[in-house]
Length: 555
Image 1: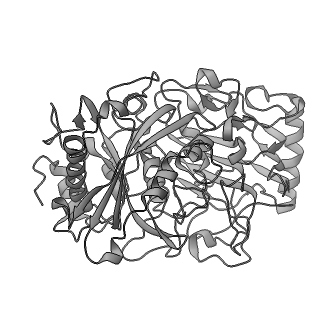
Image 2 (image 1 turned 45 degrees about the horizontal axis):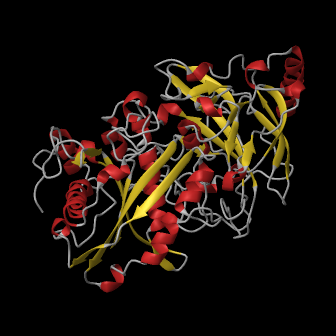
Image 3 (image 1 turned 30 degrees about the vertical axis):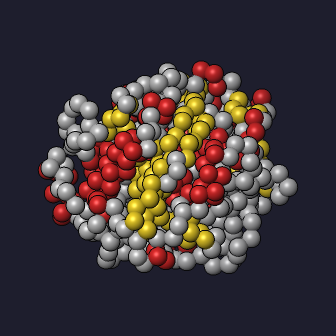
């Protein structure tokens, strides 16, 4: 394989020293640099209508069982179907974004190699996804595929630049996915970083984004085969990898080579970007990634509120409970209704039976993405979920057994908060860590958050969840989302409204769910309205007795 002469010295050293570390091309890191990423230079657009190029690559190499032929009818159906309620690329992203993002995909005829591609000749015809040293191999392979697509298949890349910050072409491709029939492939490449520094037309040389037909291609998702549902599958891997290009956080767990603190841990549950088996369960992305991208309506709980939540697959909203902004770091909790709506978000309990209920998350931005593009290198070596006891986003476990982190799930483990469950304030409890494994609603430094959830009721027909949520009073639901130094400030083109990052056209709080159906935020009684209006004396009167009661109960 040809050497990467322009590959940065610092990154090459890291690749050498940390060759056994897990690769985590986490593009949410780059989303935090909002002005640059939303221009198209660092990530794919995640709002509006995009046109995506899918390039299948068939490698006919031995052993044949590791290089099965691509199922082209299945790939075309997955990427190009429109209104099907089954798991398909377009309908999935439409539902996940409340209709705010539409991905139209073109699937090329496959590029076929009889034997290993030149760029993979020394790697066993595969791109290892387990360490940093895979990246130089990967960028050469991607370069080879792009040259063939453009020079031999005559792909016009102008066709794939239709969406930018202003809703029109911006000089950057909306997104490219490579589907490869080789094992152990699942990578999202920041071409603009791995291709070195330079300028000019980069189709044949080194330096920054690739460029074809005057269109820059700064990123690419590469997906190989995985066994899912008893058949080789690459389209599900592609969904996860393309999610990184959009800005969704990679919340899977990279197991260290030795001294693994949580050998059974696989990352965040209930997310296509986390602990997901690359199968047809079609679980939606986590609440925080969707909130960051403006893909959800967020309601900031203030005081005590009884709220009925629709499942997120049916357009339900996300609740944000608590705010902590001290010493430059930011923590809060999120809650949402999860469970099957149509064929999407089919969550299974540990006993293999379908389940619906309330998912609750602890978000800690001190462990989250950083605003500078260079921190991609750091994220390659230290993923967002690689401290299982204090990750960027953590599941609160209903049964308090912490099997999500420390052990395998057993048949009686409940994965969601269901009928009669409660989340009580952890007054006086030590901070949650590997030595204090107890159900905890405190922040990680031990500060009490004051949040509570009680009277949970799940409608097993609709999947709706009703509960009473308590949190400290909030005078301004957007207060922690303002300012250049806030990692959760809304990006260009988005405005904070009652805690949600929305486009001007979405400020009504109404999005579009499956098949164009309206998905409205949950109705909240006017006497318990949240967000900026929840500063009434009645709210204080509701919260104070609850806190006093819980303190007495604990003692």
